[in-house]
Each structure stands twice: as C-alpha cells, then as structure tokens.
Length: 259
Image (cartoon, rainbow, N blue to C red; front, top):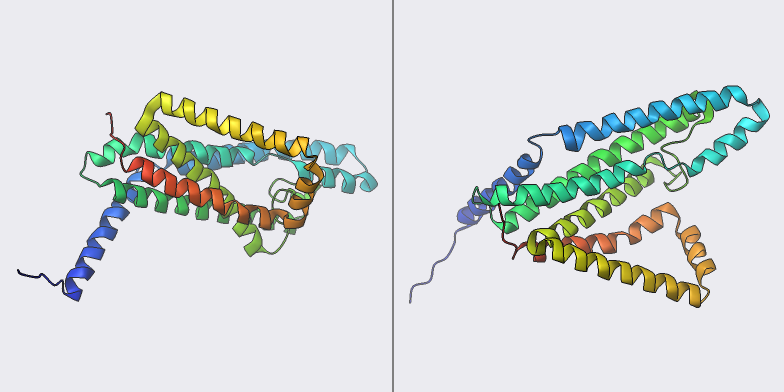
C-alpha cells in the first residue's frame, strides 16, 4: 500500500486556490452593484431629503421651548427601516438568481455559499459603517441643524461609535442571512417549501405570543428589552443569525438548480 503525503507547499497552493474560488463568487455578487449598492443609498438619500423638508417645516412652525420635545419625539422614527428589509431582498435574489449561474461555471455548492456569506458580511460592514458615520454627523450637527433624527433613533445605540457600528452590522447580518436561508428553502423545495416554511414560522410566532399573553409576561418582555438596550438585543440576534447561516448551507448543499 502506498501512502501519499501532502507537502506544506501543496497545502498552501490548495488553500490559495480555494480562496480564489470563494473570492470569485464574491466578485460575481458585485458584478452589477447598482441594485445592491447604489440604489439603496439613492433611496436613503431621497428619504432623508423628504425628512429634511418635514423637519424644516416643523422647526419653523415651533418655538424654542417646544423644539426639544419635538426632537425627542422624532427618536421613534422608522425612516431607515426600509434599508434593512431591502438587504433581506438582496440576499434572496443573490442566492436564488446567482446559484444556478455559478454552478454553471463549475463552482461547488460549498464555495458558492462561503463566497455568498463573505459577500453578505461585506454588505453588512459597508452599510453599518455608512449609517454609523451618518449617526455621528447627525449628533454633531444637532439633527442637521433642525433637531431631526433619522440615524440616532431609539432602536439604535446612542453610545460611542463602535457600539453603533456593532448594532448596525449585526442587524444587517441578521436580515441578510435570514434572507439567504429563505432563498435556500425556495431553491431546494420551490413554492411548496416556502409555504410550509412560512406556515411553521407563523405558527411559532402565534404560539410564542399566546404563551406570553396567557402567562402575563409582556411587562417582563418589555423589561428585557430595556435592560439589554440596543447593543444587547442585537447581540442576541447573533443566535438566529448563526442558525440561519448554518441551516441555509445544509439546505443549499443538496439543492438542484432548475435553470
């Protein structure tokens, strides 16, 4: 019997080749950056412009004593919600549309998923850094000179920059990998899989709400959110994010592209 021993150089070349294949998948996701990079910022700029006009109207319609109260009320704004949901849609499209195309170029399912996951982390870091910078500018300019609040709302941390960055990046990662897992379900089991998955998810949510309501635990739930704050809550989101990432991989590794 002959044993084959890989030299260190062989392992280095193999790892280098594997990373090149994974990086090729990353580049594939950024071939057309308009829908995943440029368009979200354009929409966010439009929403900011609309908000700015509203802030200006409110600022000029109120006196100095009531402006502080108006600014505090703006901390409940949901103006940036769209961009998180948009990233979920980007993740669904990235997996559903790119998966059969990549396999057509002899990319393995493992390399595709690793490259796609790396792309999602790049998206999360990029958008998280952008929103963090905007939140710091919003603080420095006292709400863009009008007391407006769009990037420093109550759902995000009001702590130092690295806490805000963590909140944004972790939240983006949550939506991206939930989208990836959902898309993997569709790629493997099509419409029936999505219907069953959605049905199970709805039943789980209804059961959780019923359990909390019947046990009168809503005050405890609210207290949990208050005690953990934005940083603690998004840290807990890492659990479903990791579950979605691992589940998506195992679902997609046995999926068969249809086109």
